[in-house]
Picture 1 (tube, rainbow, N blue to C red):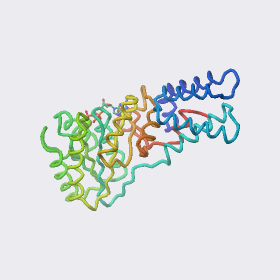
Picture 2: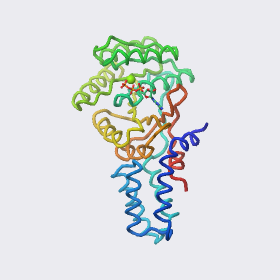
Picture 3: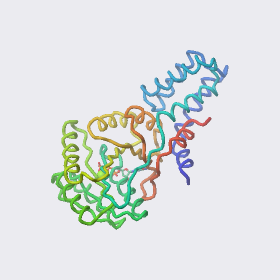
Length: 303
Ligand SMILES: Nc1nc2c(ncn2[C@@H]2O[C@H](COP(=O)(O)OP(=O)(O)OP(=O)(O)O)[C@@H](O)[C@H]2O)c(=O)[nH]1
Ligand SMILES: [Mg+2]
């Protein structure tokens, strides 16, 4: 299945909700008046696109109608599609290069799919001939370390781990030393994402970043924020906290299979101004694709 088919399947619920809603609103006269535009705005919010992003989209729609005088359903849908693509931006996949040290720092709230996505990314780049190391910098639970170890075994990749409760920054220190001495191309660092306290989170991630800067100043570093698409607007507020405290370079949206609230991808991209690099589409090793903004919009709101 190509990404378009996967998106079409994953976003079916959201698509049906939005397209049926628009059809109903425009059913009588086929053009949008002010009340109908308000209804459309509500519909977007209900589709988990988020209040701010929905208001922004509708401002664009209203502006376009004012400019062209065209309030037809077709014109409204076309403007929405166009502006959704602007929000998602150009496709921006992860940008690693073999032959140098790349470090990928995985961040995000518990259960969003950091460890699973680490394993998937490991498998993908290994297939491209990268020499990879995994670092278990989520030392919060023993199970977290074990889970990463299982992915290491599955992909035949060494895992650098300390004991449960140890200092994540120390794991990062050792993992970088190992990556350098083994001349690894890619070090993937799985972290804990407890969000109990923004200050703690900032301290922990800040400490990890300082170690990376000090010990691997030459490395190409990317910070991938993992977002669970089934958690709706929670995902949006989490994303804001993480992009505030960590230097997030791109997003991975997971669980776009299943019961995804697909509109969340738009809300998160709008609120964080951060590109979505990856889409998680299941629990298996191969269920990872580069995020494709065009295919996403085509699946969410077909012309
Ligand atoms: N359906 C589906 N499930 C996923 C996807 N990605 C991860 N999962 C599942 O989500 C659950 C949590 O994934 P983890 O990778 O353990 O998440 P985590 O962020 O590492 O969680 P913590 O270590 O607790 O912080 C697991 O049951 C995964 O199999 C996905 O793209 N689709
Ligand atoms: Mg984990």
